Length: 270
Ligand code: AMP
Image (cartoon, rainbow, N blue to C red):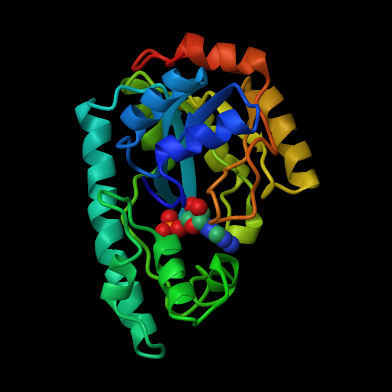
């Protein structure tokens, strides 16, 4: 329901097909896919951990916070993600205006790529650029035209990650910092921000992720050990939208058990 290229039900079917038995669904700033994913998960005997990836910003640096098993109706968290979603939509239009000055791209071209209720992000603009023949694929779109370091980039509103950790916990969720040192995507926060998140109740770090290089993973494991955080792994699979393969990184069963034990806002469907 954000920037994957499959519907939540298609994703769960692909999970079953790949021989995986548990999956977390973590769309950006929305839980709109939970119901259809849970329905398909039950039908196919896959365990579904409902989640979300909360867009955050720490002094202008993008941080993604995974929330597992929170209550999707909790008002304070809901208000934050709604604000982020509205801002994302306005920001996407501004990016397209900027791009449109130099390229044959209009807002309608982007709308043509959007599913109903989707959380709008740069990947949808990338898809429009591909459809217009301006770039070959999302990867090429992000390399220059959509780069956060490029001239067309516009920020969107997002909560501070320390505040987001508190909101996720208040909603009964388990907060895990996504790909903390994914430097290929842009600037990353320093250890002091991760420490402040840990002090606020951060539960884990997503260490095994293709965008954390080997040195980054080693450093993150040391931080996790120091601050008593658990370590997860994930594919960050987006269908055809990224090269990431389903199950290319996984989370140990005992860590899954801990997530389930700590999450009180929503049940795992199985
Ligand atoms: P946004 O949240 O709108 O700023 O867009 C960021 C999202 O784009 C990330 O969460 C990724 O899912 C996706 N993304 C970032 N880099 C790439 C890339 N090189 N190829 C495909 N998708 C990407």
